[in-house]
Each structure stands twice: as C-alpha cells, then as structure tokens.
Length: 550
Image (cartoon, rainbow, N blue to C red; front, top):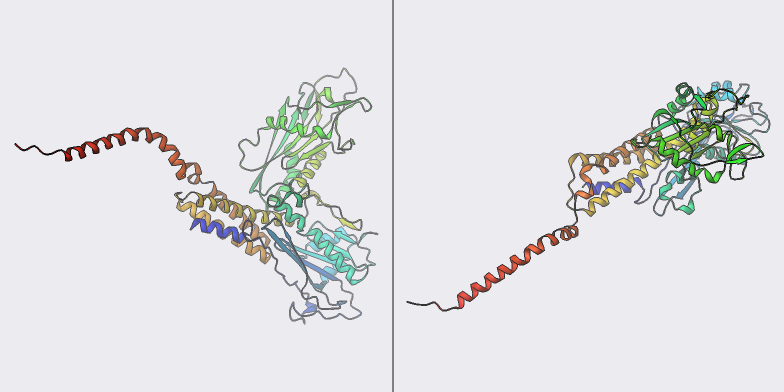
C-alpha cells in the first residue's frame, strides 16, 4: 500500500511519471460601481461614450506557475476579449512538462485609482496605487495611461514598480498595446526559462542556459554566515559593525523572504586566514591583481577555515569580507577581459561571495602598527545583498530601453519578484517530492521483506496528500497555499525516506544471503552429509545380512 501510494504521488506530481501539468484559473477582476450593469465576466464589455476619460487597467492575476492576466475594458475593444489568452507548454524533460497560460481582461479605473494616477511621478503613483490594490500573492495590476501623460518620463513607455503593478503608455495601435502588455506580463511573471531553472535537475544540459543551474535549490531553511578574514592582524585592526549592518540592511530582506524559507544569521572573524592564491603584482598600477581564472582556487582553502557547514542541516550561504595583508595591498579582482571589477568582489553559485576590502596605505612609512580600520558597512552590504539576489536567481534580465524598472529599495526585492521566487520553489518542491517518493517506491519494490512502520506509512500518506493538494491549489491559482502544501510534502517525504528503519543495509537480498551463508555452512555440511551417507549404507547392509537363528 505504501509503495502504491508513493508511485501514485509521482504520477500526481507529474515528474517522473505522466508529466507535470500546472495550470492557472482565471479570476474576474473587481469591477467599479460604474460597471455594475455588466452581468458577468463572460459578457462582452460595452463601449464607453466618446467623452469617457477613464483609463483602462489590466489586472494580471498571476496564479500558480503562470499568469492569468484578465483584461476588461469599456472602450476601444473591437471584439469580445472575454477569454483572450496566451498559452505555452515547454517540455522540461522527456516525461516532464509544465504548462502556463495568460488570459487578459480589461476594465476601467476607479475614482480612487484616478486620483492616485494624478501624482507627479510614477514612483508616487505606484506607492499610492499599492494601497488600493489586491495584496494577494501572485496578483498583478497594469495601468494603461494616455500617450500624452506626463506621469512617465520622456522616452519611457513602461514603468514597473516595486509592488505588483506597472504603468504602460498607450502608444500606437490597440494591437501594439496588447503586444506590449504581454511583454510586460512575461517580464513580471513565471516564464519558460524560470520553469526550466526550477526543474534544472530534470532538464538535459543542452536545453538550459549556463546560469540555469547556478541558483540555490529550494530548501526549508538557509544559514547565512558573514565572515571577516584578517590575514595580517599585526598590521590591521579591523572593526566592523556587523550586528548593526544586519539589522539595518539584511533583516528587511530576510523578513520579506521569510515566506520562502527560514533564515538564520551568524558572523565570525578569522585571523591569519589567507586566500591560498598568490596575487600577481602589476608594476603599472603598483597593485596586486587576482585574475578570473585564479578565483576558483580561492574558495577551497578559505572554506576549510570556515567550518560553518559541518553541522548544518540547511544550505549555508557564505559572505566573506577579506582585508588583504599589508604585503599584498592594494588587491584588485579582474574579470575575464582583464578589466578591474568595480565592486572588487565575486560570487560562487550556490556557495556565496567574497569581497576584497582594501585599506588605504598610511601617509607616513613610520606609522605605528597595527592600523585601525573602520569598515564601511553600507558599501559592503550593498555588494552582499546583490550577491544574495544572484544566488536566489533574482537577477534582472536586460529590458528594452523604453522600460524603467523601479529598484527594490531597502527590502532587497520587489513584491512581484517574491511571487516569482514562490512559483519557482513551489514547482521545484513538487518535483522534489515526486523524485523522493519514486525512489522510496523503488526501494520498497526492490526489498520485499522490508518492514514499514506505522509512522513511516503515515508520513508517506501525508506527503501524497500534501503534494496532491499543492498541485490542485497551484492549478487554482492559490500561490501561498500551494507553496505551504509543497513544503509540508517535502518535509513528510524526506522524513519517510530518511527514516532509520528503511536503511537498505539492514535488509539483505537473497543472493547476498546465499553468498554469506554458503561459505560458512558448506564446510560444516560436507562431513555431516558424508556421515549420514555412511550411516545409510551401513543400515542397508544390516538389513541384507541373514538373521542367525539359535
């Protein structure tokens, strides 16, 4: 029964079985009072009068692993867009595929939205509209403003805010506007590239970009370690306010990422810890250089000194601040083209990042040592947070010049980027549960005499129910509920798979039993069998001899 349940979960999850079909449900956009005469979402919208000045707004209810952009409009619609959508399906592997679709509807803005759109700048309008929007995870609203609107800067036709909204200038024909809306929706939604990156372990190498396998895998928790490396404490006394920097810069980001996973932060200072690579001295610049091809050799010697991942149950993200020793200062990092890196830092996928912090040489050669160094934590944390975004796959792709993307601010990531991360982790969790339960089912089929305890069986059934719930809720567009169900499924499946009673070394196949016991009992059985044969022969001989009568 447990093996059958695990195999059924693999089919339901769609990975390793019949394929994963993740769909989205179209939710009708909330209607302003002026549109109360419309009966339902399926009716064709009526054309507004010529004097109507209300701007259409695109509400993109991006649910599940895709986007259902539902568009409603009261004017300038040549045909009924009741269910005008875009659907694509990309196979992630031979037997794995994820499907997403976009459905659009138009409606007119409300009076409150009109007042918010009358702000002086797009940033102020985005902040005002955020208070009027639906804050549900996975929702998106795009506002179409007139071509002559001064809300957007000159030459900018699309403004993407840091919440779940965008402003689009109505330039060109209706077809051009709809194409631009689709482009913005794809920019802010779950794309085929994101799906492939989430299922990177199931996608052949030729179908993925080089960066697809660089992102962190989904986990229930992450540990972040900030380390200060001072290889020359006799020359430098380094002071860094890591606690204040974490509270000011890192904590707002982790508070927002708390929906994705649990985070723990610690710090340490390591003395006499060198990079393990001798930098090259450049006479022209009177500095030391680390070339790009030498950077991979930096991590292993340093990681041996960290010791942070030895007793960790979760992935560890290492952020190292290296103050070069006096004999190798100043130290600069070069890229592949030999140009200096502006941030003087680099990151390693799924591991962390290292930043080199140079200390200004004393004005007088007779200056007393050690020199006191106060680290500029604002500059350091700006680099570390950028590396954290790269590790989670939140790097922003190149956009057309007419697009303006608002920075995430102190929170480190925009609301729509958080939804993007939840989609990716939900799909990845479902795939992980499918793989785990499939492996467990194969183990149970391979070892017929294995004993399944009641608590292990309950975990398997709980994982099956949770993954089925995650797939269902994802198809209905309930992003947060689907993600929570996928986390529960991962927890139950891992708990069942790694239960000590299911260790395969505790159970021996029949061929191994014969291989172990035959060499032990065969030498003992040979003399016993010979003795039995001798006794049988003697017994037969006695029976053949005639009985002597007195």
